[in-house]
Image (cartoon, rainbow, N blue to C red; front, side):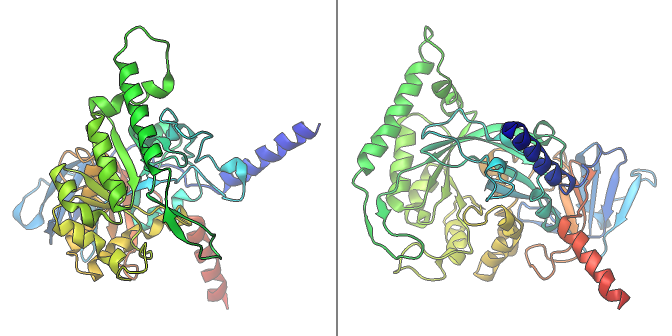
Length: 435
């Protein structure tokens, strides 16, 4: 009876979540759309001041200067006059746990981490909640795509990439099993807790931990090369790392971590690598550039990792790496990461304030990130043939004062920008209007 009552309570809890969750996903695009007269920020470093952006059946069919083209009167069925506004490709949130946790304090709604240390076979996508109430809060700031990544352990598991307007995780998928995530061991250990400073000391187990990673990859390759074998799902799931169909996302911040991680991956024949975090990546810029390795840079709105570093170093990092010819994207993992995903465009805006060209800063959360995730052939920039995943803003989308979306499309579908917060805003605005 206790079990039955508990089950009923659990169902009631999730029913409450569902009734207040994401807006109804938009239906498939049925009418061709033309957006005229906006300033178009293409995401590839260029802009069109007076643009014509057209799309049909979910794909971009026209990206041009409106003053240089002539269209038939019936070329597009729906026309949006965006004079004075701005058009952007949908922003991409990499290394995200959106949809994996609904309420941190409710264990039954937390599915971001599996038991065990080595879990490359764990697929985050099957735990993704496409109707998450949190996810709908990021769309009004332009975040329309996310990489859903598991956490914990030495090898956390396999990520997938989704668009953020769907009924189910199957509907949301735009790239399944894009990469495997490795948390490379740190060369140092920090003692203490958040209220006690503690000390930083060398990690005496570092060499052993690195050897364990190398041994795992050696055993994986041996398994994959053996035709007469018992099935091992853990080793089997690493196949994409060796044939180039998956990316190894190496989570590492320290200089030595990054150098050793790259060497380990190369020694083991892993073809595609991306550094996640990379706070000291500027110290290894030549190595990264030589091996064509990009960086998903850790949260810009953060403190330096050591006392002797410039307090503004996190703000400057994107420009430092970009100037060295490295492909840089921005990620936002850390404390309160899901609710703070909505601030991703403002991280890019901070990079502008510290010297990075505005269109290059836009690339940090659009085209560059798409390149690093391996999805740049169909999204990340406004180019004909790519998905019509874009939005219209009244002002500069990288500035929290003027980022105000009026319309957004995912694969050509006009999505809702309503959230629980917008409903409350309207409710209490009406209350004070009545007074």
